[in-house]
Amino acid sequence: DSGVTQTPKHLITATGQRVTLRCSPRSGDLSVYWYQQSLDQGLQFLIQYYNGEERAKGNILERFSAQQFPDLHSELNLSSLELGDSALYFCASSVDSGNSYNEQFFGPGTRLTVL
Amino acid sequence: AQKITQTQPGMFVQEKEAVTLDCTYDTSDQSYGLFWYKQPSSGEMIFLIYQGSYDEQNATEGRYSLNFQKARKSANLVISASQLGDSAMYFCAMRHPRFTTQGGSEKLVFGKGTKLTVNP
Image 1 (cartoon, each protein chain N blue to C red):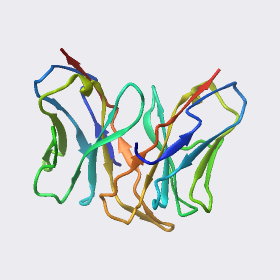
Image 2 (image 1 turned 120 degrees about the vertical axis):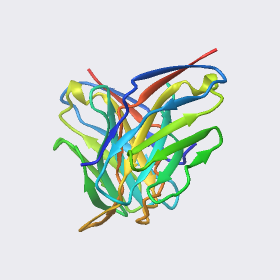
Image 3 (image 1 turned 180 degrees about the vertical axis):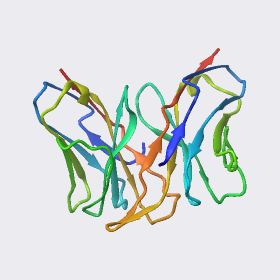
Image 4 (image 1 turned 60 degrees about the vertical axis):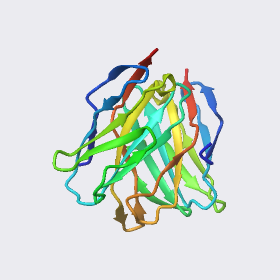
């Protein structure tokens, strides 16, 4: 158990819908990263939040957005869903002290299926 | 741009034998970190081992060791005495500390992965 929690574990929805994925980081970790794992794109970085503020953006679609709340949990919002958004979405947390070694602890992931 | 290449889509090994999973990387930075993660069929990402670009010795963690050849930009994972439970996807990843106007960012860049199957 990494200490990072993600809910829900599975999500099945229809095209055009909107969903929210939730992540709670490890106690003491200020950074939350979101990654998408799909069959065609592999594991890709989406976005990072640090202590409530956006720090970095990767290949995140405009239909996707995220935020980190004062209690440090984070939510990833996916809207106008398309079949291609079906993927495993991971949240990872880290202390991010600026050292190249700051292990990112991954949550169990949310498997999104868009029908 | 940072890039990780894993050229072996699949590997097979007999139980109790050693296996090497290849990873090459591309970067122009001097400071970076290299990670290996294991992803079993259940889906979770499990951290295995880390190597820093300035570390003089190869990293080891139990049955895992990292064969780091900086000049060749390779960071191969060696699993000794393979077990049936080692069957999984293995991902090599790289991280550069980056400092944007908003502060530090340490996203991971992943390779495509290698599927390891351990045969009894």
